[in-house]
Length: 201
Image (cartoon, rainbow, N blue to C red; front, side):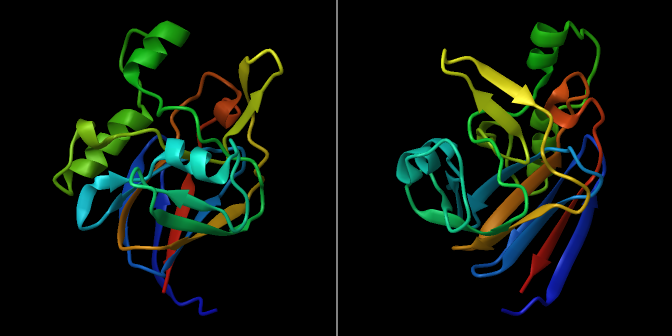
């Protein structure tokens, strides 16, 4: 397998970035400092009405988790991204992106606060898209636990510095990634840091 690096970006804490990922190219998402979540959205490059669906992914894989050789699927049940490598093994498919309303309701923050929702929007604007195109992301490195009573608990990520996932595109894609903004909980170990993304042909 070739590892020709075509593009590399550092996503600063509490911000986002977009990349075009061609069919069969691979995307590596790296946690540079450890314990940092990266929210990921993906769209069919030719039709953004087809987008990564965590619901369809859960349905087809029959699991709330995703493992090596599993695919992330679109809302039309087409494979979008294949998980080739994973040094962590714990990610999240159920949580929406953090957003201003969440910070107000859950943490009582009434002033401005960076959020994945707004950071997705700022990146999507560059591609002619808007808030209506923001869906539930694939939350890379997010450590979610479901208790037997149905309660959901978010613990600090298991990722250490340099841990990564490697995904292969199954169609031409627009991919948007954020370095999650939550500083008020274990989600990012109370300390948002940077994420690195690399595209390999």
